[in-house]
Image 1 (tube, rainbow, N blue to C red):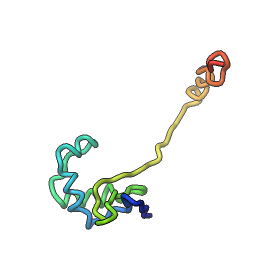
Image 2 (cartoon, one colour):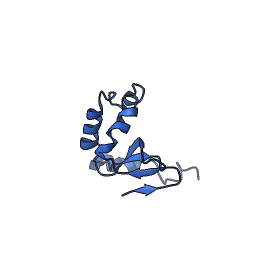
Image 3 (cartoon, rainbow, N blue to C red):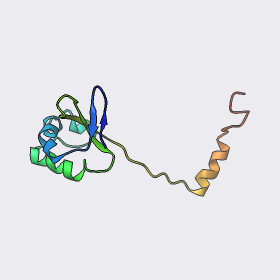
Length: 103
C-alpha cells in the first residue's frame, strides 16, 4: 500500500533505502530517543529494513519530490487481556452511575 499526500508519501521500505535510513539512524540524538542504538553502517540499516521494517503496516515516510525516506512510521494491534475479576471490578468504577457522573 502506498499513501500519497501533497507533503509526503508513505510506502513500504526497500533495501535500496539503506543509505537514506543510515543518514538519520546513525545520528546519536535519533536512535536512543526511539529506544535503539545509532546504526553503525549502511549494511546495519539494510538489515533493519529486512528484519524490522518489513513488518506489516510499517512505512517509510518519504518526500514526494524525491521519494527519499526521511522517517518511519508503523502501527500494530496490541492484545489486551482481562481476567473475569478485572472485568467485574469495572462495575465498581461508578461509570454511568448518577451519583458519580455529575448529573
